[in-house]
Length: 183
Image (cartoon, rainbow, N blue to C red; front, side):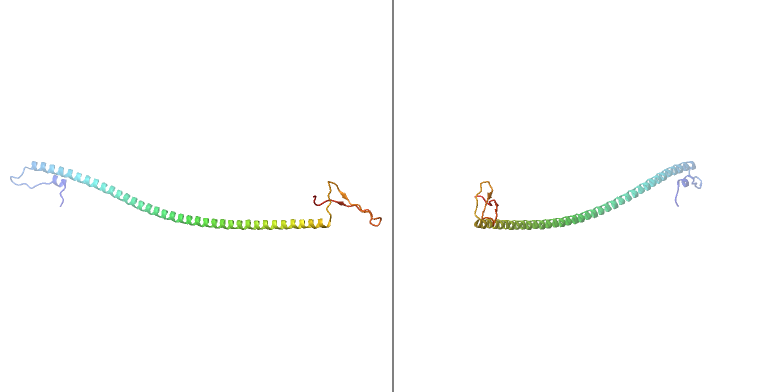
């Protein structure tokens, strides 16, 4: 059975002959009851303070756990983002390398075509020069043959008229001759 301050304050003792001084006993019991009541109030206030501290501690522990979870989640997200960024960087690098390779190959093919075109132009030029030389040689040859069959006439800036009179059977014939080459 628990004894409370009220129990102490209202406790009555049986009387005996030559017993105790009841006033002293009552004063003492009242003092004990008052001190016990103060102790119980202190204990209750300490229990209340302890309960508040425990609640605060639980709240801090919950916050700590939330922060730990948040940090863990943020770390996982950062790792995922880093992995995604690395993967994307690899894809971009691979794509850039592939495009660079295509550009290089296209440039080489274009350069090769240009060299072929230049070589074709050189051949065409050489063929043209050869044809031009052959044509010039043919014209010179014709001129030389023409000089063999036609006497060369020297004109000094005038037209030359050749009159042949053979009577009435041929009539008068005049020919303007211009020299092809002057010597």
